Length: 192
Ligand code: GRF
Image (cartoon, rainbow, N blue to C red; front, side, top):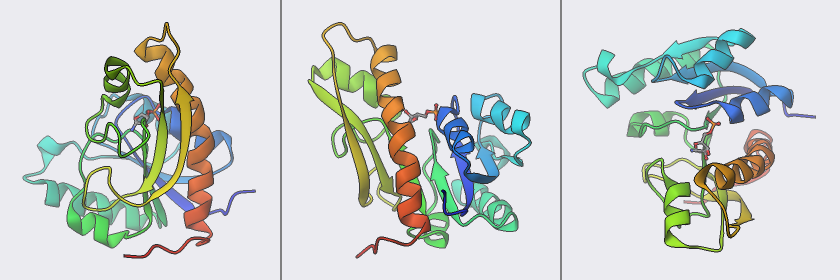
């Protein structure tokens, strides 16, 4: 059983986390993207989830882009925002408007390999034996908000970025829904 919270997903990539949430019965009421041609946008189209396009070039600043996106998400009654492969940094006003209710999934054991979209490549290149994924609350500091859940994934001797990322994503698909429940059911309290 899911909490039934109204979720809005922000995505720029393939959209496997989005699809996983839909498959698990989550209530997706909005998908916002900065990349019209991304996999997540196609999934939203296929499933009839309202899709909002917010490419940076259409807006004079990050603040104006996010003000438009915030208004659009609020109009759809979004209660919890999930960054699932979203490759933009959110403005402070956006983060404040959904304080404590924006989650991000990152493909490393934060604080290792924070920042950027190439955490899996960097972990493999660095030769770590254990990596994984993290779901954390979004704050103004990139990839540094309170950690809710993590899962460890061993790096195998013959791993490629694709193989390692696929195993990490299998764990993302398990812990992201769990983290959403923690937030949606208000079963955790965040302290400053
Ligand atoms: C995930 O690996 C996530 O950790 C990272 O971007 C990827 C998104 O994957 N932030 P998908 O688009 O949900 O398949």
